[in-house]
Length: 466
Image (cartoon, rainbow, N blue to C red; front, side, top):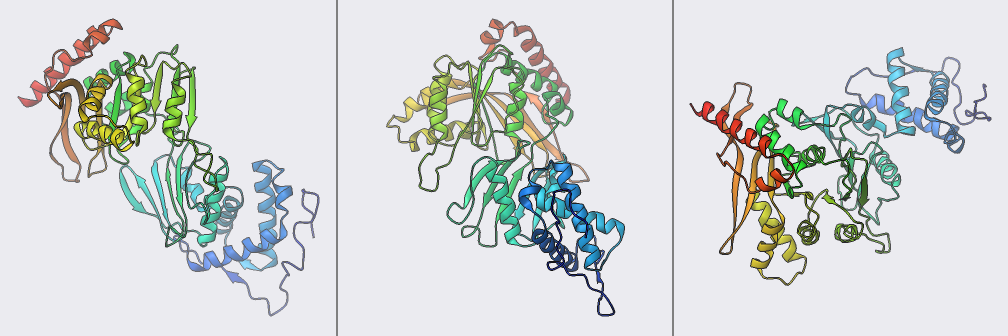
């Protein structure tokens, strides 16, 4: 029996006995592309023999390529010993599958390597969905059993020092490439572990690309560039999966390189390109319920870190109060995202978050604080055909009585639907000649570009109406 390069034989005859003579009947693997039960039976047999035969501690000392070669050599020996019949292509597929199980994220590896997938949704071991181009599709991928899925969940969260098990059944984490992960396991998840991965795009989207995809008009993109450059306090509002974080990344691209930026996130996924960035991340409590660091803790602390801009990945609680305070006390150009379906609803949600945070302030006082702090709300939406659109660029003007007054600079109007079911619409200017942040744009030398963008947008809107 050949010895492995790990320094000890990795296959011992008692563990994987060879079948010889007439009684040895070959195991034949089915060739169904959706992977039949036979495939998983064969894989399970080989995998069990591999785990018994391999020294995982020694394997861990090798780099990824050497580890894969060791596993492939052993699996080939097991296939020969167990007299398993399969084609070369089937054997290669099985080898990759097992290597992914041992070294990576199992059946998820092929999905993680695809850059066209936005989300991966695992509903127990037998059901995996993906989102591509805004549409959700069911895949033929499955896990061996719920235990394998749980092991992969634990492997993911352990990389950032977190845990997910019966005593701590909910966890937010991230993959090394920045992809955002949520895992919830039994007893809370009744049908087996549920794993949701929001993929991290290798190629970062820009406003120019959003114009190309029809997410925003060229004039609207020009306005957003000026908003990002001129330190306009901005809230990006939208529903789940509408592209809030993507748009926030696009806006931060126009921040000057000499500004000190501090980001606060539940799971770090912002991709700022500036040289002076400090990234902070929340921490859940440990098993004893201690050691939690909340978003509010981070926002309050970063005020002591001499920030010029504060970027909050998602505002969802009482940290809204601290972000508004920061926006109103010299940290102009701060940004954040929140879940809401319209700009006005976004402002109402901020008020609700502050109220539910236990701040004993009159509603009018909270609204005055919002008006004094937030300059622009950018609304994004995922439409029913899967496309994503910036539907509003809205200014916050002030108070009239007890009501917050806003005005739209740009809106998106749906005009119909084509034969393929794709929605047709257009972005148009509302004709506001001089927005509230005009003086700020002039301070940064951007008033001519702002005027040109507004004029071009108005001209384009008039032409489309005619």
